[in-house]
Image (cartoon, rainbow, N blue to C red; front, top):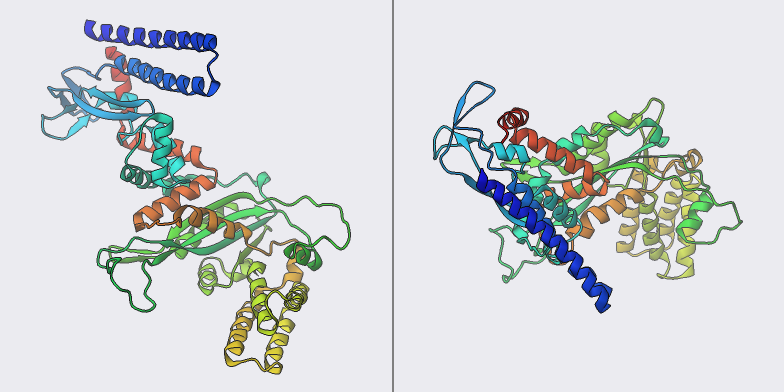
Length: 504
């Protein structure tokens, strides 16, 4: 006990001396009129050193968690104190520590059943501190793991191995599902008048399977070096109506000045956007469908957030699998189906270039006129007119086939193109939210040059990145720490009371 007290006193003196050294340093560089950037850098290094000394002082005052020769559990079992203390590493933002702990079990060599100091300090399961995990993965969901390691080294003088960051990412992602299921619905007064669901797919480049040809071998015609797996991205949000005329929409799409000056309207803002993404993959003989997973989640979101008499709308592109999966989970009679206008306009441009030169005034006029008619509720007439043009203009066979495919796409989605009704009611007609989400969640992080993913690594990143993008990161960290504490230390309160009773 005397030795422990002396150690604690030494740590306090070291910390006080470090604080005095900081004061002396500032006084000296003030006299020397040193450049502020050099002073700032040196102060930060000294703060890291002081932080380490402060944490050393804290740990020195904790003892080893020795609660006596035996320990009786709440169930009435008696555990024995093992002879030797057991060290464990603890990597903090101030450096690595080795913590000596008294442990209890039946006998040496058998399973350790209680570590009072771990429970008192609520140490994480990993050797990395919760704060370090938080910072590392907040960087990791935005930047490549190698870059994350570089940034941590710049700030903390500590550079973790990339494979450690990858494992940390996957371990942290295991807590996302429970967190997502625990989230309450947003407050009704914070929601918009229209509830919107939207989804899309984006490819994720995967690592080459071991059985696949090595990179140096010749590939057959049409064979790709690396295959992608599709990740479904879903989003649920609410928004207030936005009333526009067909002319205003065309002006916005062509970035024109309005024909007449009107008072600038405040734009409705999407409220409580919640995203999730799921990969399609095979695991232990089972197929996991990303679209199914995402639409099941969106259905749960709708059930929690859909208010009586509130409009439910779905805005997506024309991909058949998306609409078929939607129909399985949310029958069409319960919602308004809207084909994303931004997937209509490109097809009109493709049709225009079958009749007019690219970049020509005639091609632009072709698109402008037909887009305006579609927005006015004349989509069927536009499709029929383009078919007639193809016949009358004598297009080549390949051009006729392309025009037929374009018209078929629009015709199959005709019941989702009642834009005159949508605009009059203020409904959204474009899925910019999900397009942006696919780019930001998947492309910007997972499709950078040279990146290749395993199934487990990709899904973990999708889980954590959507949580981060949703603005839920801090709540998620608090939730997972609480859940891990419950799992690791079910006797936390009992051990805390035992420690207090012994004055340990």
